[in-house]
Image (cartoon, rainbow, N blue to C red; front, side):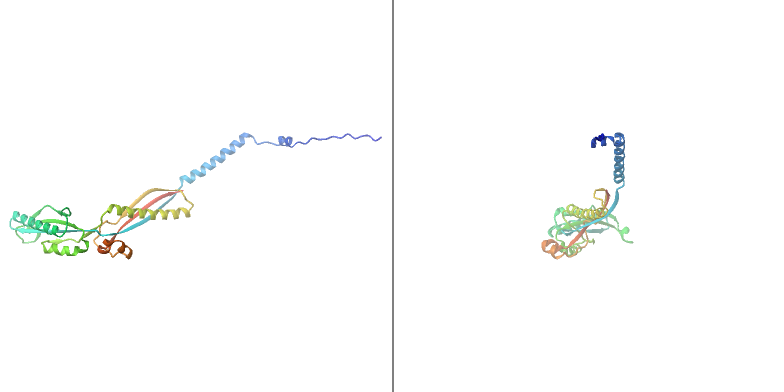
Length: 252
């Protein structure tokens, strides 16, 4: 009989193998988490503290029909005595006021200054007596006929008539409309710059604005669309109110 060889069996367990592998200590994991967090915080801080600074200029304008015309003029009176000179110019002012009222100018649209009287020699060398003056202004809605009004003022005794100044009603509203248009233009430019530089968060830090006067001494012919939509513009002409804004942005 042949001798029987002993057999040995080994029990292999995956769990036992895992238990035998080296483990990373819990403290090391915490250190790595802290380091990663600090790196992320540093990156965010650098991003936030170093924004892109951009300044853009936006323009806006609105064409408005001239609805009023203001005409300023001067009356004068001369006489040997100061009292008579003052009375003379006051009489002219009263007659001029009556003429303006008959021409359709409202009482509240006529302005009159106080009388100024000086020795005539101060105005014209060698003159004698006194000269008195009164400045007046009249606002009319008959813009298309303002040329005739100027002629009539001279006919009724005006010494000097200044160039008529044209204006429009609701100036504040129109000025705001031009400003809104300028801000919209600036915002569009800022968005274009921000998007091209991957900066999608934007904050306005300063705004500087400038505008043209809301009055004018000249008008232009309206375009066909404006003319057909607004009979006042077609008759009186239009002028532009222009607004410009300089807007500074921080972008992230």
